[in-house]
Image (cartoon, rainbow, N blue to C red; front, side):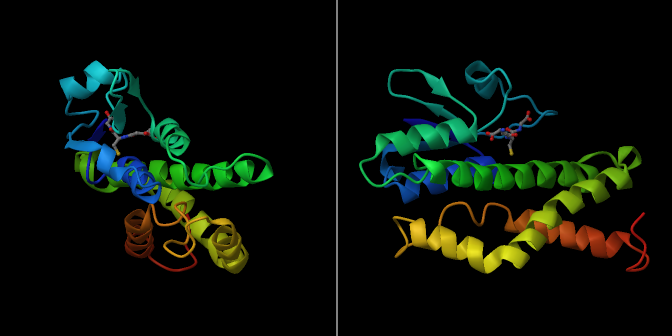
Length: 192
Ligand SMILES: N[C@@H](CCC(=O)N[C@@H](CS)C(=O)NCC(=O)O)C(=O)O
């Protein structure tokens, strides 16, 4: 199987972590592909009409995207305990995945608003709003940290090796949000 991948993509990294956690990494041929809305990558577009990575190309030529679909697919391929289990735990796991996914989405918009857009088109209230989306889940984690981590740990079939694949997709984005918040606020009370 070929994985079209981008080193700095949280979604692509999520899939690669999944492949390692499920023991499938050796079956993936990882191909780095730069792509962005402003730099079209024709190879990626040929496989995914949205032009986004990750894309998984199966041995029979079928393609799968996006990262949640690929993760679910990989989870069905191995013989070990499922990382996305059936039953009531499924919903809690998928909810955590949605949280990580939403943080990745917010991190990407934040990066566009603070770095990638031409300076005169940047809109600070948008950056502020996205930074809030990145930081709110971490506050929620702090409040519930022990119970969430304990829950993941207790149920993770890989608990001797990992604390669960749901954590750790976006530490860089969270750091970026904190830096943005610190730099953009004239005073701690000014929430705009
Ligand atoms: N929901 C998708 C998001 C994928 C995504 O946005 N990938 C970015 C890289 S971080 C990309 O390929 N962007 C190119 C574009 O938007 O044209 C997933 O989970 O796979």
